[in-house]
Length: 432
Length: 144
Ligand SMILES: [Zn+2]
Image (cartoon, rainbow over all chains, first blue to last red; front, side, top):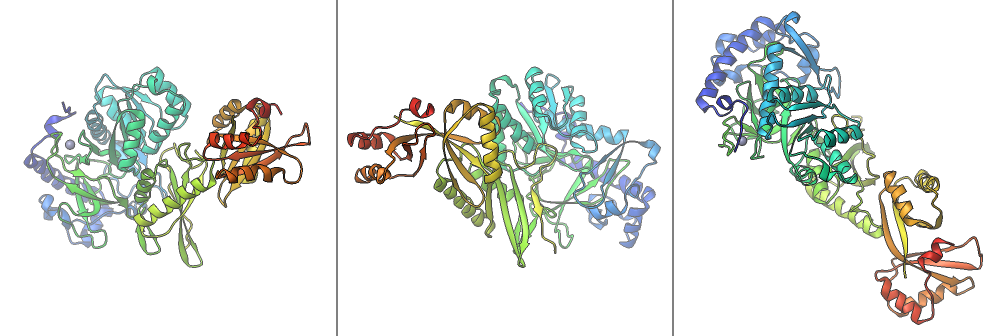
């Protein structure tokens, strides 16, 4: 039987959700207008005032915010509450340029924890569970988010943080962890380590909540099989709160967005135009309940699809697909759009580990793509011809998926960095 | 009668080989024979050692990918035509050789051996013994 953390919210009628959204949006726009000069100026430039926003239907009138705005406004430019009302900051891993810092009041932390609690209950969590959190703690939102959610649900929470696999496994065995929260690449790594050490019979895991990284359906199957668990996706971003903006239910066909807190739109990334339901485009979030850092129309750069098809779990909140790629992760190689998730799919289909690295370079004015993948005991052979043939097959499969030729390099196991936070998947050496 | 060959996946030949022999050396394993097949990016190091089980656990324990294969070890006369005699027997029996490598021992310079990887060990053994060519037993090679 499906269980919910807040059934009256998670299974509310469409009309009820819309009522909440209309009311909260109007209030939020006023709050931002009054307290965030940076955004007010953007609204003035677009000739929009709070009185133009009467509900969700008027959302399109508001200006977008992008990561560049967040960098420009660093650190306090988008803060909507006095610092004395704020209790926490979190910050993004900041791959390029200045870091992004998000502020939280106690109310904001509570609503974030609540969203994570919904995700944990959707994954089957109760106060009987032992929730093993090995997302990084600290500025990264992964650890603190799931930790807070786990407390709300009443699980015994193991605040493991990332790294130190020996200790992770020891606690997992000794304390009987039942729910694992970490990045999918670390889950895959833990699964390998568990099998390597023959600990399969000693672990009690039943579910995993994995996010903060792109992962494919094949990777899910692989982790589920190896750990004997059900693996749930979770989505979020520091700018909007952290993990738990959306989460998967038992149907595992997309993630329910917590629409009582966040309004989702899909736009055309080139024109900014709002696209009809079911279209593939860039996901945009408007935070309607947060106090300290309330972003309106924040462009996530994640490409996905929204669906309001009724879900068998009973939840009524809109579902988003797994991001199909990020517009900033999307690589244009030889003029072709390449998403790392496509490469991951091919690797899993060909029987390789999900751990890989993509190296893009430019040699003699021509782009080159190298895919480094770890050799596995199952694929290894004493015959060179057999290994060379496998390599050739992989090159062929990548060519047919991507439409461009890549070089495949087989590397020794565990040489591609992983396990700490987000795996480094792409190295773009091109200087353009 | 076969002997255990251990294949190891190595990515950087020079450093990789040093590391592998280091791992074996520190666990007290002696290499009896060795061959390398490599491409630009990686290589397969094939070894025959005095204590195969110990070698496998030392290598996997150090994170190496290894594979154990049963191969044939045949003594050859350390004289002109020694190798050719063995190969002719196999060719006449229509046996395909995947790869082979030869080695000599330090105890008796007169003894040379060839390691053969064939699709069917039994078939090859039958062909060789029927021509009076004796195979090396595991104990013999491990104790050379
Ligand atoms: Zn559902």
